[in-house]
Image (cartoon, rainbow, N blue to C red; front, side):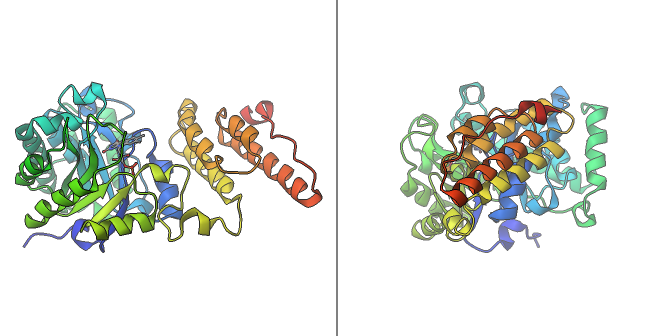
Length: 382
Ligand SMILES: Cc1cc2nc3c(=O)[nH]c(=O)nc-3n(C[C@H](O)[C@H](O)[C@H](O)COP(=O)(O)O)c2cc1C
C-alpha cells in the first residue's frame, strides 16, 4: 500500500502560502505560520544547478524551522539529473515535499527551458518529475548527499549538521511527494493539452496559477481554466490547488468551493499581512491594537538578523521591503516608512518603531500632532 503523505492528510480545502522568490524566506515563513497559520508552506524557488556549482549560500533558501511544517521545497531548472541529486539533499534536509517550478515567467529562466518554459516541452517536464522521484527513492534506500561526488564538502557538512538536529521522524525514510506548480499556458491557455501530459508523470499534486507566461502578473487569473484543470486532475486522483489573486482566507475558501478545488495558494496578499490566513484577516487581528503590525515587524527583523543575516549583515537589506509593507497602512507613518526601508539592522528597526510609538502615544494622549519619526543611524549601527 502507498504511504500517505501530507497531501492525503491535510483537511480540505488546503489554504497555503505560495512560493515567492525574494519574499518567502525563513523569517517571513516563520512569521506567517506564527500569526496566520497557512496550512501548507512552500520555500522560494532555488536553481537545481546550485548543487552542481557548489553554491555556498544554497542552504539559506532551504532554511526552515519545525513550526513551518508541512513545508515543501521548490526547485527550478531544466536538467533532470540535477533534480535527482537535489531531491536526495532535500529529503535529507527533512522537507515534507519537493515541488518543481514550471511556472516562472522570468525570461532568463523560461527562455532557457526552465520554469514556464517547460510547458512547451512536456516530455522534458515529465522526465524532471520522474528524476526528482528517483532521487527520493535513492534517499529512501540510503543514498545521502555525501555519496554525490559532485557535492562540495562544505555543503555536505552543512546538510549533515542540519539533518542531525531534525526530529527523529524526519530522519527516517519516508515517502516524500513530488509535486508541480505551473501556469495555464505559455502564450495562450492550453489546460486541455498541458495538464494531461503533466498528469502522465503522476505528480503528487499540482498548484496552478491561472495566468499564462505571456500574461506575467497582468490582468486577472482565469479561474475557469483552473476549474477545468481541476476536473482533469480529479479524474487522475491528483489534488489541484488554484492560485492567482486570492485576497483573504475567506476569498480563497470561496474560490476552492466555487471551482471544486482541493485548495488555494495565497501569494501577494500576504505581503506585510501575517493575518491573511486568519478568519477576518487583519481587520479582526488589528482591532484591539492598530500598531500590532509594528511589533511584528520588529520581531520579523530580529528573526532575520538572528538567522538569515547573522553571518552576512548585508542580507538584512532583504528585510526592507517587508518593513515598508508592514507600515503601509499606518496613520501618519510616511516618515516612519521612509526610514524603515533604509534600515540595516534589527536594532535600527526597533529604535524607529519605539520612537514612532512614543510620538503616537504623545499625540493621542495630548491631541498634539506627532513629530515625524526620525532616523537614528548613530545609535543603531553600533
Ligand atoms: C515576488 C514574487 C515571487 C514569486 N516567486 C515564485 C517562486 O519562487 N516560485 C513559484 O512557483 N512562483 C512564484 N511566484 C508566483 C506566486 O507563487 C503566485 O503564483 C502568483 O503570485 C499568483 O498568486 P497571488 O495572486 O496570490 O500572488 C512569485 C510571485 C511573486 C509576486
